[in-house]
Length: 605
Ligand code: GTP
Ligand code: SPV
Ligand code: MN
Image (cartoon, rainbow, N blue to C red; front, side):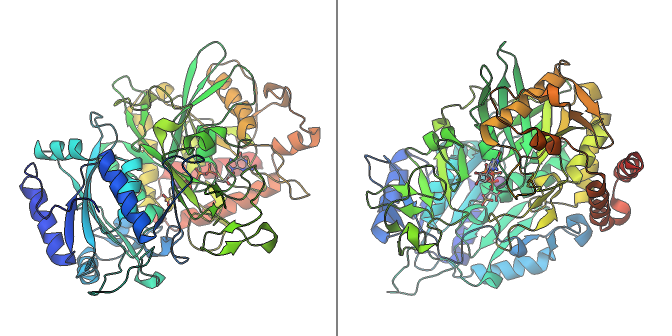
């Protein structure tokens, strides 16, 4: 295995050194490994996991530098029920978060972590979210006993000695403690995916006032890669509120017109609702180009020029595998052609991977995500619906040249969306910033496999941030509204609501989606440039049928009619549902949003 340094390197300075020692005393690991973030370190950890059975090396002729991991069947997605925001008061966390008293929860965490790393190596990961020279870059130190987490974090974040150097130069860091919660007794054999199988014993805990993060019992995705949802969304959103910026569950893309005009767009869709796909789509309309800056998280700040500038704090894609095909998302497929970690997909007999709707025939037989022999005829899914690939962003063929700009890129549009089989039209433009914030606050979607629990149930997911907002959502709405006072509102992005998921009477999607979504993006850019028409309706400005470029698309007229229809009865139900979701915020809900809701009700008649 890789060299295990019991001492921290000479470069480490006091606060970090002291904290790591304290954590080692608590967790009692067998060894401590300070990660330098090098390629050699990455390779040796992958090698170690192959030896231990956590990783299967894929066929280098098919997938060079790629590995497959299978998680424990209990550990396949985020655990929202076990996610806590431990602010000083329950009110500060708000009605949409699980709250626990911070002092009490710290005691619980110390109990859980006492001896939790016995028999394992404790890795110390210095990582940065955002380019190091970004004005809002944040540094974290994750301690983890999972080498799987280390190699994933190396793809997803800027990790290693350069970050340690910043800390040595005086930069603050956010402590992030993680354990899979499966200590090993002397001589006890390890399992390929150690974790705490009892969901009630898992904890994903945030202390926004410290700030710090403690995660126990899961090794999967956002539960365990603490730079992602825990730091870059829950903690960052609360820090951003204090510092005057926004941490959002958004992709960032650039749409370039045939004339060469660039439009930077950010879009918030709930988990598994199409961010990765939109971010790197291949437009179905000739002459238009999409390049991607990020597929999951955007940090947005007010620039000196009064515009909103967006930056991707991550360096990789942790993308949903099922549904990714040459047809739907060729650029994601290309991004995961090499140097990628696959989790919970099918292993084919020739040492490659496969998943449902990959666009290639299923292998006659294979090994499914649970490690069992599998055939397509079994009627069972071979890949878990929340199976994922972890791929370096730089490998995406359409990565935007500005994706690592410390300043980010200036946004001209912000999109909200979700999986809505009915009521919500294909595209809808807000009348104003306040109306746009209302649209974000009213966002709803059918649930997906990205979180444990029942999928396909409609729930309110304001700004696609329900599971990720680190403070009271009512204050978050107010923070969004405040930007109209903090800058010239003409400089703010225009806001849109989109829905690729509306279904017809036959249950089929009315809109082809994927590359054809460029038709909607084109309309949005032309609205911004003042060249596309819209019809003003009670719910917002909708595309006129003629204003959408549908050339080359065989879309039945009836589909288009339904996609652009204002379903008054449906909207009345929607309003009642939004009002109900608002009620739990009581007096804390900004009056501007109640006014928006009342005005919409009135316009609908
Ligand atoms: P997270 O990584 O969980 O935040 O998900 P995401 O928002 O990035 O979603 P992603 O792009 O990975 O898409 C999730 C699922 O939705 C995949 O199975 C896609 O095939 C499907 N999907 C994405 N875009 C579209 C679309 O335009 N139309 C339809 N019908 N399905 C889509
Ligand atoms: C999501 O669930 O929104 C994801 C996957 O992007 S995870 O990193 O597991 O949160
Ligand atoms: Mn996400």
